[in-house]
Length: 465
Ligand code: ARG
Image 1 (tube, rainbow, N blue to C red):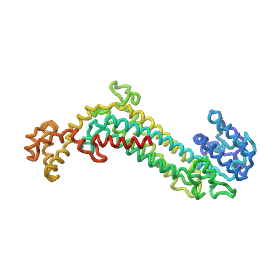
Image 2: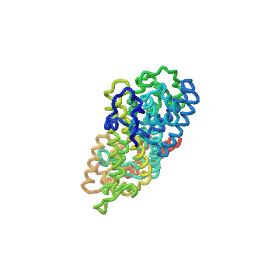
Image 3: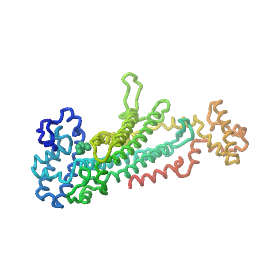
Image 4: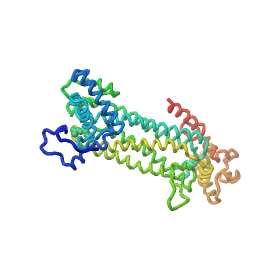
C-alpha cells in the first residue's frame, strides 16, 4: 500500500488546517481489510451510476466514462495491480479517487445523491449475501456427507448415551442423522437471515435521504435486492443483519463443536469407535504412538472465536445513537472472520466425515457392556402385565446380578430371568439383543434401521431438490 498523497486529494480537505496525524491515519483507516468489498463496491457504484443516468442526473457520456473506468479498476484489483492508498482511508475513497484519475469529471459526479454511509451499508449487504450463499453450499455438502455415512451405517449398533453413560442401543446412522437435523435448522436460519440482509440501503445517503430524484427500485432491481430499506436513518446505521448472521453462524459452529467433541472421544483408544483419515490428523513430536484428531479439536476451538465475534458485534451496536457512527467500521473484521471460519470449517468437515472409518465391533462391544437393553426388559415385563415402576425394580435387580457376575443381560438364562419374575417367557431372548432393541423402536424419528432409511430417503429428496 503506498502512502504519499497530497492532502488536497482527501475528500474533506478544504475545511481542515492541518494534516491528519500519521498514527490517527492508520488508526482510522479500514482499507487494509475493507478492500475485500471492492467487487461489490464497484457493482453498487455501477448500479447507482446507471440509475443516475436514467434519471438524467448525470449524462450518458458520464455513465460511459464511469463504466469504462470501473472496468479498468476492476481488472486491476483482480490482477493485484491496484495501488491501495492508506491516506484514502477506505475501499470507497480509493476506488472513487482512482476513477476520477482515470476518467476525470464523470468520476466526481458518481457520488451524487450518495454517501459513504449508505454505500458501505450496501456493500456489506452484497458481500454478506454472497458469503451466505457460499456457506449454504458448504452446509449442504456436509449434510450430504453425513447422510452418506448414515446410509452405510443404518444397521451399525452403538451405545446411545445420556450423561455420557450407556443408555440404550441406537444405530450409528441414527446418531449421525441427529446432526443432519441440527445443520438443517442452521440452513433454515441462514435462509431467513438472508431475506433481511437482502434490502437496499442506497438512497439513504448520509442519513436523511437526498433531494435528487433517485429511482431506488431500479437500483434494488439491478443489484438483486428483494426490497428497499424504508427508513434512511435505520438504513445507514443498524448492523442487525450482520449480528443475525453471526448468531446463526455461532449456532452452526456450536453444532460443529458438539460433533467434534464426539469425534475426539470416539477416536480415543478408550472408545475406539472410529478412526479419521491421516490427512486430518497429526502425530506427536515426542510420543510416537500418537495420532491426534487435530481438525475436530481446532473446530471446537474456533467455535470460541465465532461466538466471540457475535458478542463483539452486539456490544458494538448497543450504545450507538442514530444514525451512522464510525464505530460501525469495526463490524467488518468480525463479520469477515466469522464467514471465513464457518465456510472453511464446513468445507473441511464435509470431506472429513466421508473418511470416517467405523469399528463396528468396538461400538457393539461398548453397548453390550453397558446393559443397554435394560429398558427393553422392563418394557417387556410391562407388556406381560406389570406396572412400569415394578418392572423397573425387577430389572434393576437383574442388572445388579449381572454386574456381580460380570456379564450382560443377554447372557442370562431363561431360568435365571424367570427366578427374577415368573412373567418372563422364552420370547424374552429377542428383546435382550441389541438388534432386537433397535428394531423394536420403529416409530417416526426412532432408531430402527427401517426408520433411519426412511429419514435418509426424505433427506435425500430435500438435499437434491
Ligand atoms: N469505512 C467506513 C465504514 O466502514 C465507511 C463509511 C464512512 N463514513 C463516514 N462518514 N466516515 O463504516
